[in-house]
Image 1 (tube, one colour):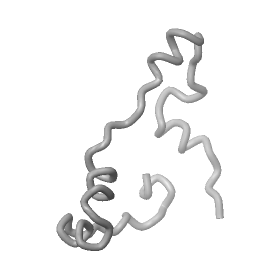
Image 2 (cartoon, helix red, strand yellow):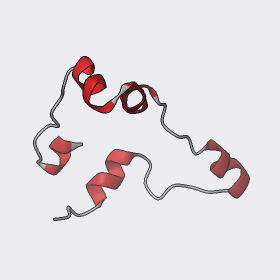
Image 3 (cartoon, rainbow, N blue to C red):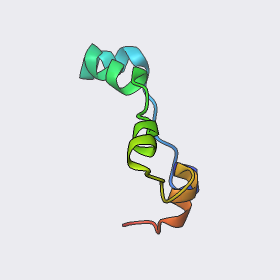
Image 4 (cartoon, rainbow, N blue to C red):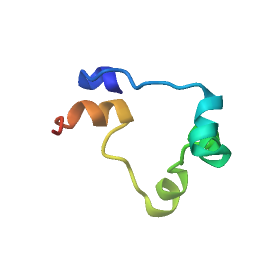
Length: 65
């Protein structure tokens, strides 16, 4: 995502250091949670996303800042 915007890659820190600084729950939240799906909205509301993928949506959106 950063490369698509011409931004530097995000920094990474070791998991043990993140756990020490932010706590175990925060590390689990940032590394283990699954993304959300839109299947229910598609089925029950007949909803269709504007863009077929997040890459297409990001490419079509002008940079901010």
